[in-house]
Image 1 (cartoon, rainbow, N blue to C red):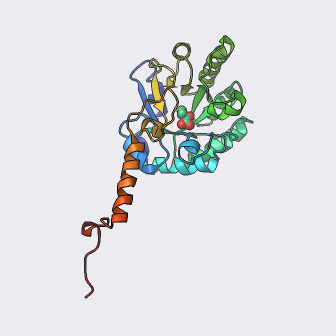
Image 2: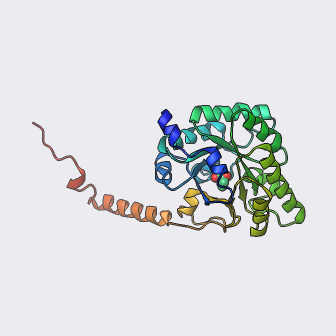
Image 3: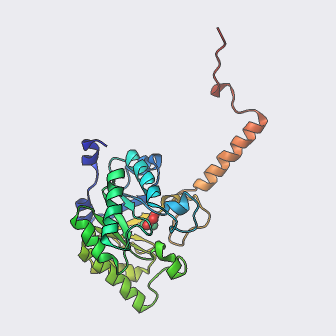
Length: 273
Ligand code: KIV
């Protein structure tokens, strides 16, 4: 990565300064070619641990490893040069202590060149967020539906239906902001609760299944491209990649069987001298 490459990217303070301003456009990416396409249109690209489910076929994000995140983070950094790139810290890599979190987060930053990490922020997280931020690691927090806790929560249902849980989500967001997070993902909550969180903190909220009033929005890219038939309620499919791939594979199979592919346009047609 050249110094120039780094200088062109959106920065953490620029994202934080967008609180209450122009909406922050975010998407996930896991590979270089996709990152290159998204780069022009996104302020922030998240290398989410959703990679475990949408790329590796896992049933949750719990099985994602630090090595997987680093490999995908490196690819996304190679493909992009404008957006701020944030890499998710996977389950088990940051929860037990700020020191473990620093060891793993610094490895992610050094080996990928990304500019920040994301952690799912329960009540345990404030100390870690402060510890990382003071030591040069910007933190994006994640409250509401926290997919890494799906085994405690019993699945991926929207959160904050009771007053107690809603209050806990607001408190988690306030604690994450006070501790030094530069922005916070708010996932799978009611519009009303998302709006309360957005008003309660002075850093940007990035909604996913939340509210149009959040300071920015994020979706999992393969979901919004229509790669999967079943997606959560909050996913709008902006394309039908599933249908396009299906049609292409069907046409390819037909032409191979009919021996119409490869035609002479797609073969080397020289003779031996
Ligand atoms: O892993 C991920 O892609 C995420 C987004 C859904 C915010 O955390």
